[in-house]
Length: 371
Figure (cartoon, rainbow, N blue to C red):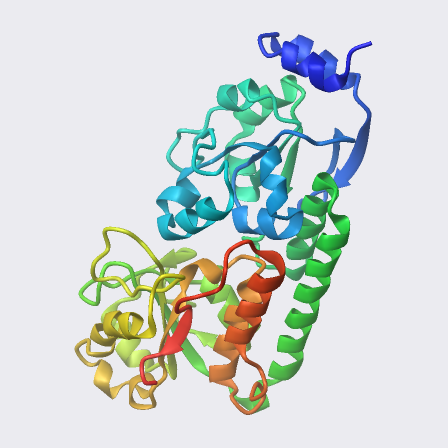
């Protein structure tokens, strides 16, 4: 009698139909993913491909689960956020040498690479799932199930469904429920405190602060920070001023709108010397030094936000994640200070790291230009 593992190990060179037949011998169970799809997955998951939401996978499955990961889409982590990838690589032994299956956006994703890795499961973001219909058909023919994870939708329902799906597949449902309860509780608390906003509808402007103050970066409508703004009962400057979900707002339009609050979205990008830098390895002085030129843009001195000291840096990577409630806390605390007086978003961010992540909290993630 041979075990399922030994059979699959010996089947590395089998054609897809033979591999499919082998998987059919294994006991399966049903998992509900973020799209409310019923997905049949092996009862024991030992080989995993993770294409996005790496930090969510880590928080829900636990750092030890990376021993089961046999491949990742490397670009969205190692290329987009190299400082964060380096920090996780120091804590996760196999991450630096992890095989790369390619990435959806740049056309490098390879179903053949995934199939060669013989995973039991592939975790895929919704936007990749939509874009990769042909590749999914190849993987399905090889008997490889796909579980969709979707934190990008920025709905409570999909945040919770994604968290529970990760836990169900990886055998860490108790940990997943703890995280789901934490997120649901914090989200509900934020909405309760905001309420009707005291009859106010603060006007907010978000901009991607990547290329320096001389370049107008993207703002967001109906997604990312735009979704956060409307969830918090604010008036988002991008609404009606950009044609799509993201794009720059004309400088004159920002001046005419006169926002009450400005949030410049920074990160630990490389080769972006004029960006607003935030993240683990960035001190407050560095962040403020990058933020100051934005506040000094032509005409901005007369804006209500600048006059009142309400221009802020916020880590762009906090959006659309299990940690986004901390960014919402920070923004809401500036918009409605009396209602969030006892809320400390930095403390929330630190506590989350302490409980669920293998990397220590440090650095600068969100702050005002004026100390």
